[in-house]
Image (cartoon, rainbow, N blue to C red; front, side):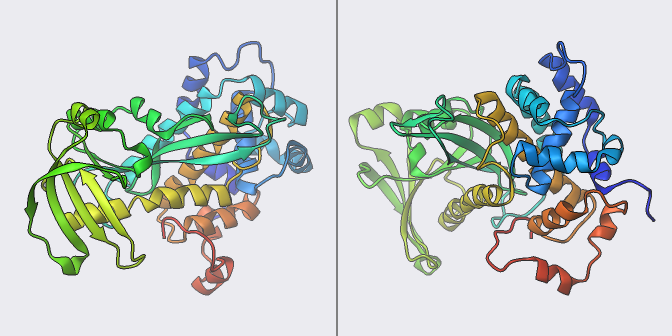
Length: 388
């Protein structure tokens, strides 16, 4: 039955406002602010993400056109382009980063038993980064190349549910491997990353934390083979070896044994040489774990395609980080709504429906009660999908 609340208001009910205000107080977000609170700013920016608004003027025009409904949406102040621009520029982005972590914690608990392609009791994470190109004249602080600016979005993705558990935003010149120094490794968990993160001193830090890693070896990798284990080549595994590092500096950095798995991917016809410190899983399971790293690539492509993180409403460091963190919050919020309401559509379909129904006064479930055939028409065949 229609409760009289708009869909946007029902989405807002899934947000723990008490936790949000704790984040605001932590960073004094309301210092010398008389109107347009941090909550107003967050809801306005979330609306912009859900409806894919192009600019601050676009946001202002859309919300002022529905001014009589703003109070019921939770936005208590009139939305002005200049006010929103100033809020994005001066209010601490860590407010929205901390609030995103609150929702990430909820989502990870909801998706804790979600399958991801490998039967594994431990938690598995994929670590990678994506580069967002910017204009150097507008974003001079985002150092990347001589005539180009960029920021990097470094993400540790929980493979159960494709939930980003840890996110850091840096300028484009920061090398990916340096981010391993900021991670706190979870004992017993698996960390999967490409060879861009290959640094044996840092890998040894993961090993000392009682965590496991799976990564690719570089082409000039030197090692001593200690023994070979039997393999079933019909599974694509060509060899499974116990090794020690051969190079002087490599051996000084990592003195323990490693496992080297040589695998041929039947789909791509590529041969991969994988390194891990786990000796209990089968070689095929190690290879399957590495293949699941593609989920973090899919996550980056998905959010770039369906959320507003490639073009920004402000040009300062604080404005960019605020927008990215609110985009991540919206992504996680929709994942929470999907799980709690048992909506069987893909995340792409959910966002498409929400973008045109936010002001409708009907239940969220009724908005997704279209027939399967109608939903298929909404989905483009070349779109990226998560949570199918």
